[in-house]
Length: 323
Image 1 (spheres, rainbow, N blue to C red):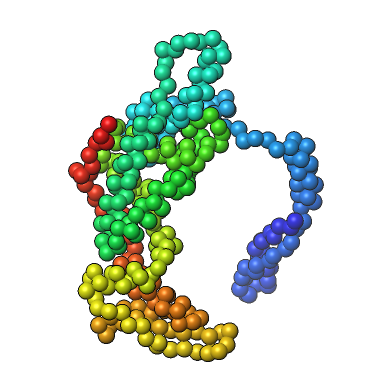
Image 2: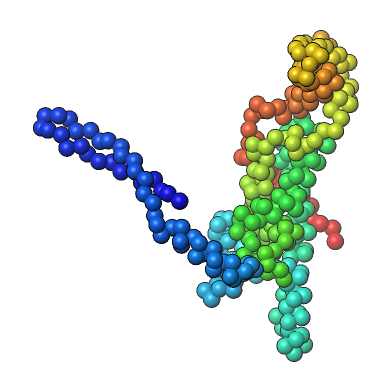
């Protein structure tokens, strides 16, 4: 392996001639690099596969300090016992009970609380907040699209991705390490509930807006909401909005009867062009044009204005969960 070393040298010229810096690029080979890499690889092969060790196993680990730092990173004032409960999985509670039983401890005064109830409340708050934000930001999108976007934002994969990037992996009290995606997602929802109980619903809504809803930024919305039959949906939308009957027209074509054939079809309603699309045949072009028309009608076209993440959400319509 070679590294390129760049240096600037000044040419020594006779008096009266301007001196200008000259870029001098030279190659240098580090003879120690290859043997070192081989030795590191040999040692790694000798050790074999080592399971990942949790950060809590280190001597200088201070769990309360880490919980406090987590709250400061989010700029939230948590009640530390409640935040610890938000990170405690039910599997960890069962593991601790088994360990205490093996040690001969039959009854313990310290009861460990898991995050099941907090996660249930957090899931309710997240669902209501995300739906309210999407309806406010995308008012022309029907309920089917709102449901698809909500499912995307609140999916286990997305919530675990957010939780991992917030530094929750090392804070989770779980029986397994590294924790599963379901554990990360459940803990993130529990953190939302902890924010509500510590700082109120408004702070919880701001957290959901700024951390979860922002995952919609610069996304292809039709990749999230896959419309199975765009032609049928477009006909239904035209009937609901009294746009008139659809009329597909062939606008242009080239390369007929070749493997590179291309057709452009426009969709008209009341003699107005509402969408156009290309395809290798007329049927494909009509489907593409239908998708383009739906994007225009729903306001989710590729050149749409970016979503605003400054909307203030009022939590007055959020009611407590009925037990």
